[in-house]
Length: 369
Image (cartoon, rainbow, N blue to C red):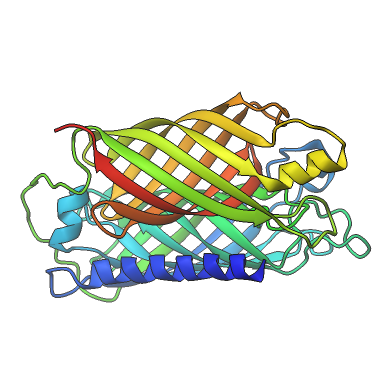
């Protein structure tokens, strides 16, 4: 299993390196560098009865970030925008030290904005990364923490911010974030922590912002006509609390995608999951049901240069051993390594409960012209 975790880390490092190279190797001489700080306060969503009694604490924290405003021609050609691209380092105190502890996280994020020169403008952010959680579940010392059971977890973040330019260098920010942290099903229990926050912060532009004027020219990386996506995925997970054995999970997704705006696309398709952890669960219960599941899902894809953030909603159409919920969600990030291939990471969840995190390899081809 250490090999699976190692592959996930390698995949993440390759993804971030490629994004950095994509921005830094553009045709503009520089991408303005900025620093930021933010403080925030929120609440935990009690998405399961088993964790309701410890969900009433109020998370609070502080974060610092460093990034670049991507002003290059290649970025502009793909999204007709100048997104922020950077890293967010944050500390969250869940205000319940004995049970929930604290989170120390680093996220990579992309934050598109179409009006960076206005005095006041909106931007939205999508990010994912890695977190150290200091008080995981322990059957003896901390049996009530069903949110997470490993020191290493994987946070996801979605946010919208109101930006106010105070001076040419300083930007005041009022932000609303939705945070999710779980270990992706690597070990149980793994209910995951979901907590919305509101916060204020300020960004300081180290380099002067000089935005070029460019025409909107269509590009071919995400064609306007229909596109087929073939995606292979893999991961492994445990079954029960205090178990170390992990069982592989494989997946296949086939979907049709259609761009509806310059950075938005819709998709519909079907995915097949071959879950050997479910097979082992059925064996222990002396059941002969099929451990494979098939779902129909539809979703939205946000196209930011070579990066794609997506959210999909699915419903099972074949599940002999019934899932806890008939519907599920997928949240993920793909990086376009070539015109026809992508690599990425995907989180599958049933409502607010994470099922597993997998790594993905995708192949894309046009259906019509």
